[in-house]
Amino acid sequence: MTAVATESAAAQPAHPAVVRRRRRSVDGRALGRGLGILLIVLWCLAPAYWMLVASLRQVDFTYDSTPWPKHVTFDNFRAIFKGNNHFGRALLNTILIGAVVTAIAMVVGVFCAYAIARLHFRGKFAVLGLILAASMFPGVALVTPLFQFFTNAGWLGTYQALIIPNLAFALPLCVYVLSSFFSQMPWELEQAAKVDGASPGQAFRMVILPIAAPGLFTAAILVFLSVWNEYLLASQLSNNNPNVAPVTVAIASFTGSDPKVVPYTSIMAAGVVVTIPLVIVVLLFQRRIVSGLTAGGVKG
Amino acid sequence: MTAATGEVAEQGRKAGPGDPRARRRRRARASRGDSRLAFRLIVPTILLLGVVIGYPVVYAIVQSLKLDKADAGINPSTGFFESGGKYIGGKYYGYWYNCHCANGLPGHEFWPAVQTTIIFTVITVAFEIVLGTMMALVMHRAFRGRSLVRAAILVPWAIPTAVTALMWKYMFQPHGVINSLFGTHIIWTGSEWPARWAVIIADVWKTTPFIALLVLAGLQVIPDELYESAKVDGASARQRFFSLTLPLVKPALMVAALFRILDVLRIYDLPALLTGGSNNTTTLSILVVNELRSSQNAAAALSTITFLFIFVVAFILVRLFSVNVVQTQARTVKA
Image (cartoon, rainbow over all chains, first blue to last red; front, side):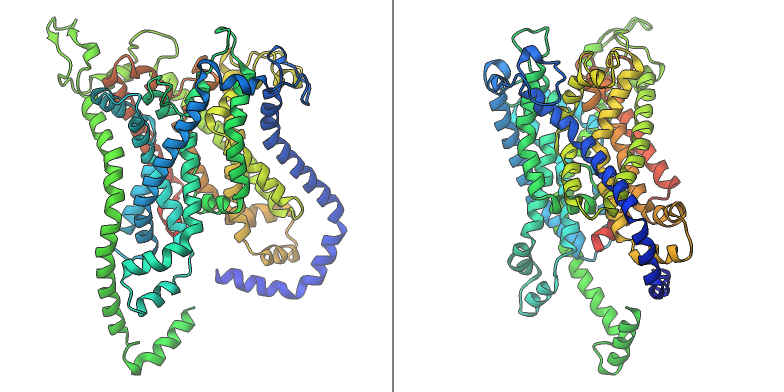
């Protein structure tokens, strides 16, 4: 770090020359950058755009490759909420499971995150390592024992069978993101509260929690998104019960009028319905989510 | 920083409260209080994780050493009846190792699944690291359109993996848009390597943005003056990248790579929904799930193997790259 400081100090007088050199090649490089940006945006958005276009196509034109909406219909969107697809129910299930998991993870995780971010204690590294290991834990190692438990308990295909396993990765994620947010907060205020005679617990409840609200909110979003994403455990533990299965499982088991033909336009419509709220949330809170993601270094 | 504390210490030496010994004593007292509070705050999380992860894993290991009810019957080698729940030691582990496949179905074997999983891991992570770094460099140097790129880059991340898989499955159909776009007639999900590439492409599309964001965060910490001085010293763009940018983002890149490697080793959603595990795209996770409904205890043995495999890989990688994830994490937590 000191080396950086001295080097940068040495660079100061050379500034005008650098600026001049940069100006000469600015056009070519700006063009290259613009091209790069275009490529990235295309790469990221083209498949999603294609999903949207396909969702608006009539079933008979499933494999039409016109790059813009043609043979437009909203039948696909109507179809997914009808029939045996239980799509509306699945949406509600996902929201319910996500809300319960997020609530539990937040309530439990907030204390652990506070301890990690703020308190000095022995074994902090061990706790952090344990939580990290838990967040990297393969879901497939849980699927067999939980499948056996829930079979024995008669819980296969119930809400609790879908909520409990989600905690295994929601809680570490929550602790992670929260602890990085907590450590960036203005803790002088906590000191002030303590000076005024508040206990550590009181300082936490009455001073810190209100300031931490945005961070809590971001952590909750990230946890909710990760639950919304979950497929492996849900697909097995919902045991084909459409009344509790979340939306990812429902989409994967979509059937059309003809069982031999995969109803891609309907599946794409369902994908759009599932994705749009997520994309809106993500875009609205993109700054927070990006900082939460990069600080936590976790995958959603 | 050190100068400031030194000054404070010097000033306080006479006054008492700044006395190093008193300070240490005070800190010890505070940290004992801290420890007690920390313990109470951490216990619920550890308990809950113990219930939802620790106990199931131990249970799975115990079960994997017992005979499954589905496999109960006359033991052909001894002629004795064996009932479910009897301890049989490492028999199921041997069963997977020697690949005596229960139903002889193709794609139902252990070693090919290990091979497929490793192939997926190596190729996807390599692509993601290279492409992600490139994306991050473009984004870092872009002033106009940066927010647009960041919004675009979050879209693949926001789409649920299951939806991603179905979306790419649709695009990889024989009459799908990818074949018509490139004028090819590949049946993507019909044979080994096209099917694998389909999964790899979908995974790279979904997670490269995540790597790009991590690398970008690493890039933004590098002070501009460093580049300026390198330029003044006559370093070419290539030199600046390889001897300045790369070493400085390396820690972020290593952590990202480690996370991604562990993530792809347990990949399930994409191959399960995109190819259904056919044509040698069955990963270890898919194999476990396939076994789940025929012999749960054999599946438990396999999931234990998978878990240990990932654990060992993680351990080796951490040693090899000397990535100290916990410390890096602790640093971000502190920063």
